[in-house]
Amino acid sequence: MTNDESDPKEVARRYVEVVWNEGDIEEMDEILTKDQVYHDPTGDGEEPLSEFKEFIRGYHQAFPDLTFSVDRYIAEGNLVSFWGRATGTHKGSFMDIKPTGNRIDIMGINVVRVNDGKVAERWANFDIFGMLQQLGHDPLSV
Image (cartoon, rainbow, N blue to C red; front, side):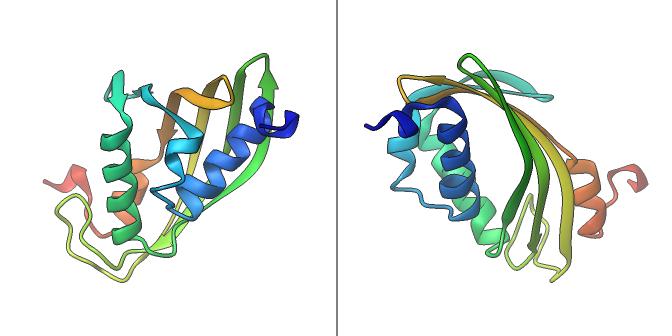
């Protein structure tokens, strides 16, 4: 592994490009630890890499052109924060919502902790409410 590959910002960039933009399930073994810890507004705890692979596979089936454009990466020690926008076209089932053909455009913020050149812990907060509205599913109008 070269110095660039172990630099936390480079690990975070690779995480975004390979995992989110390419959806490369096989390459995820080289980017994330086997049992990374995940935190989001709905809960947190250990997440086996196999579960995260299924999550990514589902996102890419629902949004085959999914792209996460990062505005900035900021690193302090082994923590890297980054934010930007995710866009894509809803062409597959997502959260029991049948394909709509609608485009999504949402903002999100992430922090990753890098350990030995791999993402070992993740924090994320995306505008899921806005995404559901863009898919024509407003949770407030139940």
